[in-house]
Structure formats: C-alpha cells, structure tokens
Length: 86
Image (cartoon, rainbow, N blue to C red; front, top):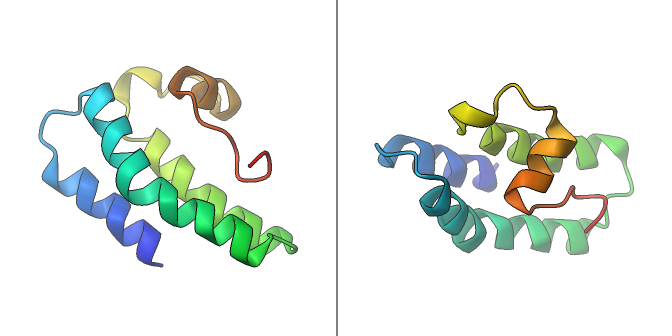
C-alpha cells in the first residue's frame, strides 16, 4: 500500500519526533492519499475501512508520549478524525 510506504518513509527519516513536524508531514504527504481513498472507495466493506484505519494506527505509534492513551482520545489530541467520520 502506497500510503503505508509514505508513513514508513516519514518514520525512518525523522530523527527528532517533534509532534508539530510529524503532524505537518502526515497532513501534507499521507492524509491527502487517505482522503482520496475514502472518497474513491467509499469504504463499503469493513475490510477496506480497517486497512485505511491501520495507517492512522501506525501514525499513532510514532508518538511516544501518547502511547498510553486509547485510539479515539489520541485522534482528538492530534486533531484528526477516523476514516468513517471523514
């Protein structure tokens, strides 16, 4: 999946995991592809929704200080929404 590769690239290239920098890169590079996938595929199948949501779960793991927080609260902290809400 192209989106996962982009997220992996961000993870490998950034040494300093600054929250602002990570969010900026995520929104500029990854999120636009997620938005396209959500509108193009319309996520009719649960399997497709889960694949798209996995990308945000991987992004969540990049933040060491937010790992104890559950996924929905984590998205609120970062100002992101689930693929179903989009």
